[in-house]
Image 1 (cartoon, rainbow, N blue to C red):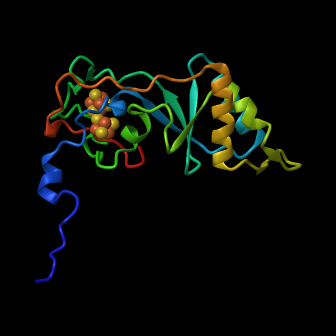
Image 2 (image 1 turned 90 degrees about the horizontal axis):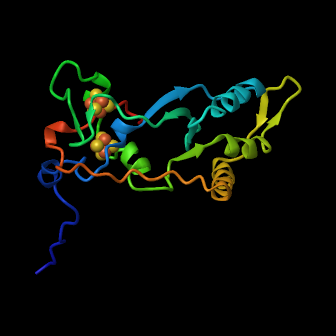
Image 3 (image 1 turned 30 degrees about the vertical axis):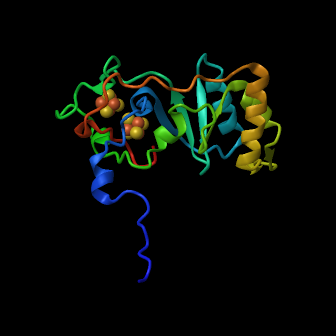
Length: 190
Ligand code: SF4
Ligand code: SF4
């Protein structure tokens, strides 16, 4: 009798039965990422340098080369004690949240319980100064060459280690797991 292959992984009902947000510290509600144009000139980079001079300011550079301003303040609509959205199920919940797909969640992958996010680089003022030494400009002060993403990551990591700048990973888990209908939502790339 021919061997029957044993199915691997969980089937559809088993997956959808489980809330993908269970055990997550909900960085989607604790971190605000504001899109920022990709710098193209010396003054664009200088403006980022200016912003990073403000206390607590950080930039994010994604593996895809997108820049974000990072604001580490939680949403005022989050009940931090229960880790639940207080406007869930009401018209007050932003559609940006309502329609976010929590499967393959970029937030969870990069901000929950990790100091070494796989898809982004957190850049401080000091880290940017190191990176800027590796950026080249043409005669019109337009950026002509930037270091590869992996090199930027190494440069920033080295600087952060020297400065002791190691942001604490978000690990605070909801005391009670979110109910399946309390699944978070965001724009697709976040
Ligand atoms: S949407 Fe993502 S970050 Fe937000 S609670 Fe769910 S898994 Fe965590
Ligand atoms: S899901 Fe609720 S608590 Fe989270 S960011 Fe959206 S509105 Fe705020």
